[in-house]
Length: 303
Image 1: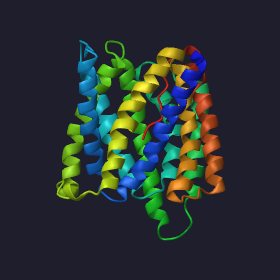
Image 2: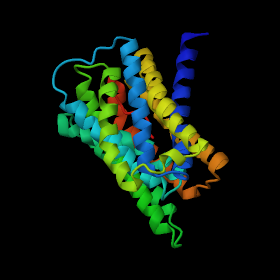
Image 3: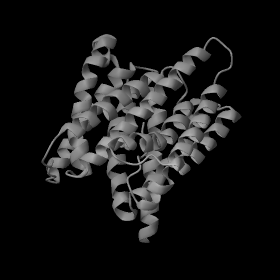
Image 4: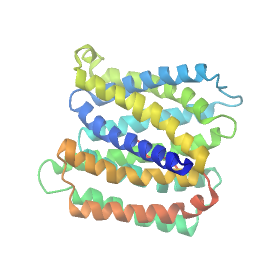
């Protein structure tokens, strides 16, 4: 099989894994509490990542740990807390339109706080993407009583995207002294430990033994496919074609997730939401155009 085709298939599988995480996340929160799900997801992922690091004899690196620790708090704890609670309030299709598409723009802004110049192009991209996000959120409001709940869910997902942007910037700093696998192997258990008390506040994990097979299968998907396998695949693609090109994979996530949401969840996105999604993507391209040309890391889709 041609090298380019193998790389394309790997990128496609990565996008499918991220898209599937939105669907399985929505299915999981229908049968269990969101913060408990997030906690168990990252406990499992942390154990598996540690096993992979040991098996591959991956060095955890040297030097200061603060970027990795803070990245774990934002990227694994705060991100999942916001997004999974948001999924109990809004459709998965909203999250797929808002989160993967706004993360690159928010990351470009967050990077300006660690020395990367905030150019006019990035500001224009942020403005355009913000308009698109507003369209997605506004189009989901129907004037019914449930609209305020959906609005709250959408805003939580937007906050989650901001947390992932911070995680990405801090991860870029940590990459100067550590490998991607080392960073995630350290950050995942930190995120899990931060989530443990939050999950305890929901129901003290008393309901976990009663979770049905469907919930556990969804949690295992989120942990093993959405967290571990997709990470390994993504960075394999990065090594083949560079971060800038590989990160374009995230642009497939909204389309795939919307299709899956229609088939598996019965979601019916409003036409104006689809327009908003396109507007967000235009903003993303404006904000990340220079980054993509320079081959710097752009965040992958997340769920």
